[in-house]
Every structure is written in C-alpha cells, then in structure tokens.
Length: 498
Ligand code: BG6
Image (tube, rainbow, N blue to C red; front, side):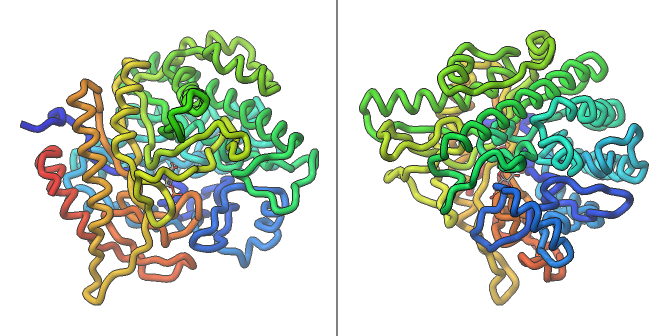
C-alpha cells in the first residue's frame, strides 16, 4: 500500500514571468522582473541598485532580458500541458500575470485577451484532469509601482493589487480550487527588489560602499533602509493577502487558499548554546511569516525583534482585524536547501535576511552550491505540523543543473532523479510521522528561466527546452530520463521510486 494519500497532488511548478514569454503581446504590460537583465550563467542579478535599473532602461534595446521571452508557453501551452498529462500530473502550479490582465496595474477593467488566455489554459488542464494550483503574485509588480511608489513600501499599491486579486477570484473561482497569495513572501526581506520591487538606493539616502555584496554585512544607513522598507513592504503584502483570503472565503467558498514561504532549515554550527540560540532565532524569523498568515497576528517575538533592531514600520489602519479575518487554509512552501548558522560575531551573517551560507560538511552540494538535505525537509514538515496544525503543500523543490543533450539528443539526468527520490522519500517518512501533506509540485517541471540568474542554462525540468541564455534555439521540447522516472512515481502513487 502506498504511503501517500490516495488523492495526493503530484505535479510540477512554474511561474508566469519565467515561463510565458509573449511579453508585449495582446496588450500585456511590463513588470519589475522584465527589467532584470542577464549578466552571466552564474551571476545573480536580482538585487537591483539604481545604476542597474537606469542601465536597464537606457539600454533596453540591446540588453538581454530572458524573462521577456520565457519559454513561449504563451503560444505552446497546449503542447506543454499534453506533456505534463503524459507524466500523469494531477496538479500544475502556475501563476497569473497581473500585467497580462491589468497592463499598468492602474486600469479599472482587465484586457479581454489576457482573461481569455487563462481560461484556455485552465480548460486545457481540466481536459486531462489536472488541477491548477495558481499563485496570484509570483514575483510580479507592474513597473509603474517601482517608478512612482517605491514598490510595495507604499500602501497605495494595496487597492490596485486588491482589484486584480478580486478580479481573478471572481473570474476563475469555478476553474481553480487551489490558490496561493504571494510566492515566497519572506523573500522581500531577503531580496527587496525581487519580492517588493524596491530599489534600495532610489532616493540616494546612502552611499553604496565599494565592493558591496548584498549577502555580506551592511553599513548602518543601508541596513536601516533595507530593514525598514522591506518590512514595510511585507506588512502591505500581508494586508493584501489577508484581504483576498477573507474575500475568497466569503465569495468563493470552494476555493482553498495557502500562503507560500521559502523554507530555510537551519542547523547550529556547533552544540554551543550560543549557536543553538542563534539557529533558534533564525528559525523564529523564518516561521514568523507563517505565524502572521496562518495564525492571523504578528507574534510577540517579531515585535521585540523590530524594537531591538530599530525597525520602524507604519501599521496599516485596522491591520489587526484584517489579519485575523484572513487566515490561510493551508501552508505551502518551497524547499531547496538547508544551511548552518554561527553565533561567532566575526563570521556573523545578517539575521532576518537570506543567510550567507556556512557549509555543512555532512552534506553534498549541487553544482550551484546549494546543499542537498532531504532530512531537513522531514524535520521541518514535522515542526510546521506542530506549530500550525494545517495541511501542507510542498509547491517547490528541485535541482538546478547545467545540461546539454548527448549525441542522440538525450538528457540522462540521474542526478535529478536521485535528488527528487531522496526528497520524496523524506516526504513519505514525514507522512508516516503524521504530517498531512497535500501534494508535491517540483519546481520548473519544464525548463524555464532561472529566477536568481535570469538564465536558461540553469535547468530544473523533466522536459528539456531547446533555448540558450541568449534566446537562441528552436524552443522544441524533449523528454529527459527524469520524465519517465517521474511518470512511474506518479503512476504508483510514490511507491516505485526507481
Ligand atoms: C524559488 C522561486 O525561489 O526558487 C522560483 O519561487 C525560482 O521562482 C526557484 O525559480 C529556483 O531558483 P532559481 O534561482 O534557481 O531559478
């Protein structure tokens, strides 16, 4: 008998910005990720300073913007969905693009062609009994809000966003049962541009230090702007999220809405109580995002953290009531890696942001230095169950790798099979431990544009897409070895892991 529940939602995950392409077609507008340009196959580029943004605009005609191309799902969705169906998918995570419906974000009415596009996609998915799992906002902010409002730091974004969110619930509630509000909502405090459309030095309040690295220690004035603006933005996203959860509960009672956060499991570097406390602190920080969205209130811990760190935010009018009324139905998460923390001040990483990773000698690394740790997923699933008592949907997990077809045009991605197998095994054990896991949708089930690198060459898919970082290639799709392996996993409900 399978260790997975009968209706377990096996599938895969994507996002509009990284997949669709068709950037300026049918009236679509541009969003903040359309201004991130490719800098090299291992060059992170989602930390946007003013000079980068100005360059992106000034050299728009010549720079390489892979997100604008995606993998052309906009035109090829039928072929792609047929391939997902061939693997036996029961769930497909995708996002709706705000700017395909509301090109500048300010319109009162959506663009007809955009609205129809998503109806067509949902129809196609249902043809094969695949449940759409829709992220309402997956790293997307119409560019006008970056220019005029300093991204999500401004409360003015909320009503415009809510108009979009309300529209999609009203329009698609009969076709989409499972929804997520903001993708990886905790990323706004780690990468303020990516999660919140915030250009940290937009108002020239501080000098960017020479040799500055986003994940290293920050000068005080920069840290102040970083913390205040990203937590302010987060507060507004919490409000928008709770407003739409409440609205959906009242107007679309068949829908289930989840939060979505990036799970970052942390180990103390040594058994010293100081290291252990530090790991505890980081874990509390990571959990606070779920505390607010699933528990409906800011925990005391984070209020103290704000006081201690001098973080000042303006509270939205009536926010306590709004959060209380907009609690999510399930928890969802992305999980890729674990990491190690130390209390040693000389090697201190910033708290409350993406951890500068200390290596764990017990774990192997991916090609991109992400440490592979299925056991941490099992531990965290148990912790999440104990803390929130809600079902959990694992909506991202996977292994990014450089890949080239061999002479016969095949990709033998046994490394990916081994990564996924070990994580599925960990999920099975967590289910045996008593965790209610609803489903599993590994990231980038079809190769798509990388988020941190805006490259095509970092690939996650079961399906290979013939396109390179410059946009050359046929964009033809082909099946990797993992395609056949995952098909068997789904067909046996997770019993045959190969
Ligand atoms: C998650 C994001 O953080 O990780 C995805 O939600 C992203 O959008 C995925 O693509 C993998 O990261 P990357 O940088 O390897 O594409």
